[in-house]
Image (cartoon, rainbow, N blue to C red; front, side, top):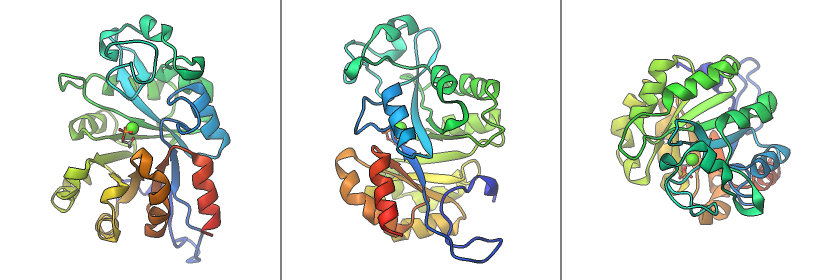
Amino acid sequence: MLFLSVNVGCSNVDATTSKSIEYSPLIIAHRGASELEPEHTIRSYSRAIKDGTDFIEIDLRVTKDGKLVAFHDEDVSRTTDGKGDIEDLSLNHVKELRTEKDQQVLTLEEIIKKYGDSTKYYIETREDSKGRLVMEKKLIDILNRYNLLENNQVIIQSFSAKSLKQVRKLNKEVPIVQLVQTWDAEKLSERIKDYKKYAYAIGISSQTLSDKEVKMIHDENMEVHTFFRVELEKEETKRMIELKVDGMFTNNPAYLNKLLDGSK
Ligand code: G3P
Ligand code: CA
């Protein structure tokens, strides 16, 4: 398998000792501890790190003047006091916006400068509104500048296979996760061999995941990372622990850690 060295998630047996070891999936703080603090802000990321996350998740967008920022939606109106699409706003404009609890939108570099190697980064790329690849080179350049690729400190995920293939072209080593939409998951058995050419894991919604899909992915020697619809996280997490997925997104790392402790 291409990325054996990045399997820092769960494993039932330690290959070097053949002893059973504890189930310990990767914990990925979805937009930070976004159940407790405004998503993608310093408050949210700091809380996630304090609460024992392995990775902070960063959704990337590009501003009109080409800067990478941590932002999920195309439009700024749900989470800030502004209006308009991020890609039509300059970074100066975006920095003037405020989220709940008076927080600023962050650039990727601000996040990396603040947290350094105190956490790991699980970064999502996407195409721009016209389907163009506008962030991959900027992202790899920044990650190289801060030496984050050498230290296995980053995972890159996307629903866009086009974006991930571009990332792989730019960097041969960074661990990649192919996200699949619920409706794509039905085609998983057809597509998985193609995904495996550049990705080491499949990121899949908990709603789509049963032991059948987990086995299919593990049989290909790939990892399974699962994400949740916000309103389903609480009821679905226990089922995901039983399925022994290799990584779990959470809006509340403290809650997930408590459940994992209780399952030992
Ligand atoms: O990356 C997994 C998950 O974050 C995908 O959903 O819409 O929250 O980015 P979304
Ligand atoms: Ca995301």
